Image (cartoon, rainbow, N blue to C red):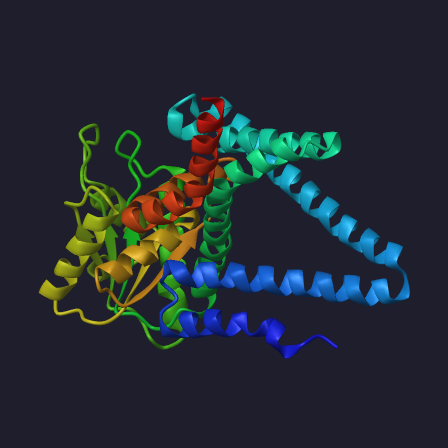
Amino acid sequence: MVPVSLFLPFVAFLLSFWRDPRKVRTGLYLLAALAWVALGLVFELSGAVAQWNDTAGAIVLLAVVLLGLVMVVGFAGFLIATGVTLVRREGRQLSNLLSLGLGLVLLAYTIAVVAVVVSGSLPAFLWLALVGLPAGYLGFAFTAFLLYGSLYPALMARSGGPVAAVVVLGSGLIDGRVPPLLASRLRRGRTVFDRLTARGTPPRAMVTSGGRGPDEPVAEAEAMADFLVEDGLPADRVLREDRSRNTDENLANTAALLAERGIDGPIAVVTSDFHAYRAALLMRRHGLAGYAVGAPTARYYWPSAVIREFIAVLRDHLWLNVVLLGLALVPLVVALAGGLSAQR
């Protein structure tokens, strides 16, 4: 019988989600709960099998380790494949190399660990373990971000409640026209608007938010509004916020615009799926009630975009991550200092 305590970590996740799902810790709680349950079930199964046969119990543990290894290698291969596709289609800019680079690093580290285990070199294994501590911290945080960052916008798209306004964030124009990435956001925003209207709780406005870049003939907000009106949305329901240059300004300027129009209440922020979770975190920072919804993007583009968003979240919580990463590096630094002292 599986002990009830095995599922207690989910209580922390559910409480955090209930209080406000727009927190980094909520994703960390979810991954920790899943990992705790998975480990607990593995040990329960291994123990049960070992009572019948010691060898069978060891085989179960080995099978789990091999499964984990296959999953890591598969994930690395996915990052590499999508990274190559992105570079071929979008060019060799540094931001486009993130998925490819992370995949190669992950694959190289996995191969090194397997080689060391096979060789039976304990010192080499210890050094890899020490290097793996800070990498493990970043890996756990990234996995939590990836998991919850995919779950959150999907839940909000289906179950998000009534809002005073639907806000679509800009992402840049091409020759003054709405490109596919931005069109996807606008269509998802229209879907949210229509869904809430069909429920009998129509938003009071649809806001297009985006300023004019140095190479753009018009502000993003103007082109986005024209797109929505041509799609059949009444022009008097569309508000334009045409001064922002980034997500922080999108949210701050939109809040001011809605306040000027006397539109009060929660909002639904619509952006690309890879950006939705971070947009929700920024909404919370600005004190804006509501939720964020993600629009689909090309599969080859998504991994590198998610990695960029994760780096941005690390930057947004800079000092906390500096402290935690520093603590993870302490054993490696101590070992290196001890090694240098021994050589003297």
